[in-house]
Structure formats: structure tokens, C-alpha cells
Length: 151
Image (cartoon, rainbow, N blue to C red; front, side, top):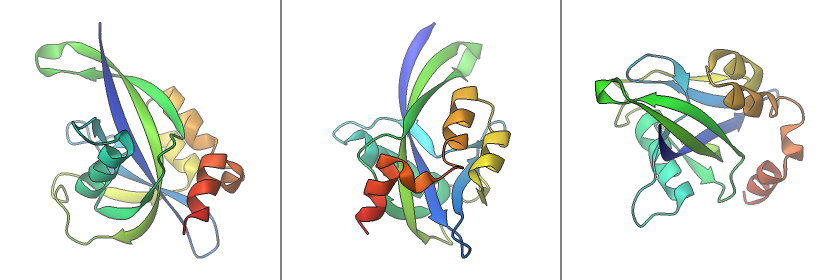
């Protein structure tokens, strides 16, 4: 099986009660809940590419970390039915702006979930674990704490 490298943004914000929420989008092909993700882009740092994916797929702007929160793997079905094993590096992003108009708004839904609710909706076990890890004291995670400190 071939290997692929992808990047993803994990858009985050705290609701009015101080609870962490993660923004998920539906995939275009299956309608499953996923994070904004895609391929690395020539000439861009991986987190900058993830930031562009977040804007195009979820219509969010914010501060993205240059440190990854974690990685997960999944099998991407290519045209012709071939499987590509992908490793996805996840970069957390604190959302400042939720746009009303964005590139893929007619192709995807977006919704805020608690990390646990998001973990229940994703199909990849490693991603579910990563999301569950945010449910308990997310501000203690160094990469999140660092991102909050930049505001």
C-alpha cells in the first residue's frame, strides 16, 4: 500500500461557559465528520497549509500552532478503489473568526462539538483518542497552553 502525508487543522474555541469546543466539517464524499485537512503545499510550512484548509473547508480564521497536537492514520480511497495509507499531522488552531461565506460552504456542513462528542463521531481510533485527550484539562496540554499564551 502507498503512503501519504497530510496535514489537518483542529479549530478550537471556548464557549460562554468556558468549555472547549472543536469544529468539525463533513467530508465531501461520505458526509462523515472530519477535521479540515489536505495535502502539504509546496513552499508552505505544514501548519500554514493546515490554516488554508481550515479557511477553505470550514470558513475559519485564527491562530494556528506550529507544533502538532498529534498524528493519526487512515486509509484514503483513491479513484479506481486503490487505498492510500495516510498519516495526518494535526495542528490546533484557536478560532478568532467564523466566516459566513467561504469556499466550500455549499459542499460541507460545519458544527461545534465537545471533544468527547467529536470523538464519538470520527471513524479513526487514533483521532478519537486525540480528541478524547482534549476533554480533560485541555489547557494543560503544552501545545494548547502555548497557543493561548499568544493571544
